[in-house]
Every structure is written in C-alpha cells, then in structure tokens.
Length: 335
Image (cartoon, rainbow, N blue to C red; front, side):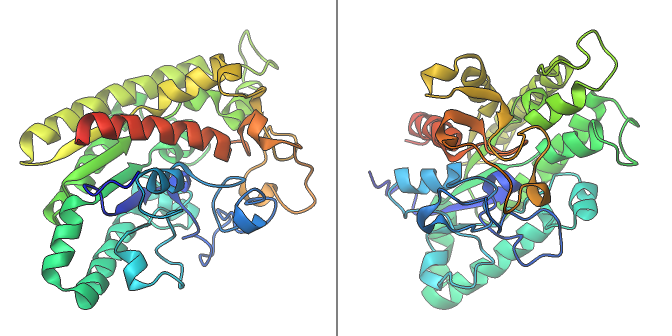
C-alpha cells in the first residue's frame, strides 16, 4: 500500500544496501557476476550481493514507491527515478574510513557527496522547494558497520587486535552520529538505522572460528564473543538514536534490530521456511564471497531454504523477512 508520508527512500552503507554502485569500481567487492542475481528478475547479476532482491528493494515495494531501489551510479536512473529514491551504498564500506580505503570502495563521505550531487539534479529538474520537501519527507536508511568489525576488529588487517571492541564501537558510533548529523543538516528528518547482525553467526566467521584454538576447535558454531560484541554495539546504537531524536528537532529515529530477526531465523529456521542456517548457498558455503563466488561454482538448488547466499550475505528470502520487520517498525514509529 502506498505511503504518502514517505515519497522516497535514500540508502547509505555497505553491501546490504548496495544494488550495484560497486560495478564500475576497481575492487574485488563486486556482485555483478553470476551466480549472483540468479533469482533477480531476468536473472540479472545487477551488483546486489545476493541471489535476488535486498531488504531495501522489498521496502520500497511495500511502501508503494517502486519495485526496487536502484543504485545511484546506475546510468539508467532518470531524474524522476532519482526523486523516488536510490541507494548510495557500497559493498565493503564502513563507518571507519580505513575500511573503505583498504577495500577500494565508496566511503560514507563519498556516499554523502554523491547524495549532494543527486539533490542538485533533483533541484534542477523539479525546483528547490520540491527538493527540500522531498528530503524532509523521505526515509533515510543506513546499514553499515559489519565490515568494520569483521575486517578491523576480528580480521587480519594492520588495524586489528590493537584496540578493545568497546573502544572501537565508540569510534564507529561517533562516526555514525556525525553522518546522521550531516544528513539532518541537509534537511533529512526520518531515519531508519540498522544495527549489527549476529556477526559471530555469519558462515565466514564460523569457518574462521573453527580453526581458532578453543574447546570448540574444528566445530562450526557461532562465535559467542562476536555476538556479545554485536549486542553491545547495538545497545550503544540505540542509545545514540534516542539521544539524537531528543536533540534534533522534528527528527524521527527508527532502530532496525536486525540482530534479533536473524537470530530468530537461525534458532527457529522452520518458522521462516529455512533448512540451512550455518552455510551459504554458493560453493561450499563456508568461505565463498564476492570474487570466490563465481560462474561454474556449484550452488544449492533452492536458495529460499537458506538464510545465507554466500558466506556473509543473506538470501533474498532472508532479506524479505528482514524488510517485513522494517515495515512493522516504520508503521509503529513514523505513522
């Protein structure tokens, strides 16, 4: 059903909201090749890091805006299409500038610059008044942070192991607060901000964890400490959003609690129609991601039975369940 109170959706962040902005970048973080997109309309590998649609695609459809949320850098997006929303997200990006730099993708600052460019296009086509009204009523979705902790906190970059999880979370929260403030200063008022997923239950993290010395060595189990860390970050994020809503006049901050939704999928898979919770659909499902999930790689027959498409990214079936939760929260807090 159409939602006149939300005429457009603008998304920022990482691969969870990237519909193909990385396609033209010189980076290994691209999903514009088979078998990605095999269940997308036309079986097109659009650049989405999944077998089909993302949660933001489902969200704009549920809101009655359009069928899917395109990439800003997609040359086919018209000014009229721009005025109903696009995603600026970039797979491999993060709140920490080092994350985007190392991965060769669009930083959050670059995404903000692209938003400024988009608004100038909208102003030229429809006038300043309509542009300002659009930004005021649009929903700004931010989904980012997983790459920061996977690569810079638990990974093998030069930045890893040099700080506590809590201190790094504080840095990320500070960067996020600054980003939201920048959008608010540009006229944005409605925000939907996703927390971290259960990072320790991502197939890649479970695979790496199974080789680490512990009492569970060589066993594929969720990495409990990483999940505890994710919950600690999410607690700080919720406090931030509450503080910002109180301090920024006329703003509305909605927290998208993806952690609980995904943990429910993992612990109660049959409730969602899932059968496989520990492995991705692509290849072995243990390590494959981006350049390792390619043409000729064996894939599962029915991705709708899997929570994960590759070793980090959900299937479109999982994204649909996530988007349904987003919609319930928006109905509760924005209407």
